[in-house]
Length: 355
Image (cartoon, rainbow, N blue to C red; front, side, top):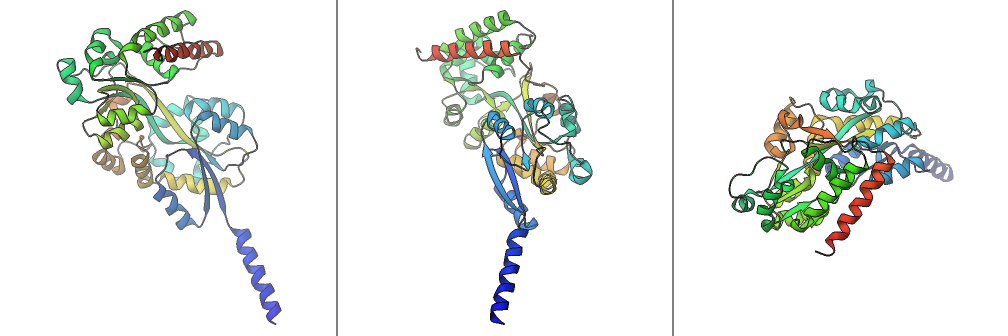
């Protein structure tokens, strides 16, 4: 009898082990509120194997290789390629009741990438804008600052501000796009001659910039070593958490926007669990909490109570309608254009070693 009881117990325990449900998620680093993730596991009984990446290339490699994920978070510029290669499966929105809380404008933007709104739902989004410290910049500038890229791109204004510290991102396509957009041009529509000219102009500015990086400038903004800088919104708000004097704005000429979305890979082992987690993340309060934790914009519709609360908690996380109209997607480049941009950027970076 004792032997039979032990066999029965072992059989039951083995059944529980086999019955454990595991969801495999691949997301950007520092892109979720840990308590939201823990609450989902506790409430659902699903164990989440949560791993992260820091570049889009890592996600591309994972989806092209043998790695098995049930939920991934691609950026908008990856979607056309991933959909064309059949790496993502169309979503069944009847299984995502909280998708009705999403911002229709974001869904419309995604529709422009191979009808990507059929394959993904927006998770977090953001922009590359202008961050300033008026307490430092206005005395150097000689008055109130215009809401313009001219603070970095106009020779006279840049000269006035260089003494208090200027920063530029180490992001070749983004920076060239913003420079040309400021001048009324489009990066993708110009030939290599336009790219060469833009590169030379940016090269000539480098002596007046204290920073050209995507990391150290955050601490320099927080400590007051920079007074004006190009910045990712999440980085700007990270610095502003330590230095409330900082202000992040979308310049009048426009700024870049990106959208990171939730998607189910074609060969996901547990798409059913992925749907449950996606819908959990889309619950308005969870979406608000993830925006606060990551310091990137929430995908919720502007008129939801959670967005009103978010605007009170962190005003810079809620761009107004006028600002949203000034956002644009980074242009697609041909391989030849991309190679030329990268080559010019290496020249720009090399020039800084002599400064």
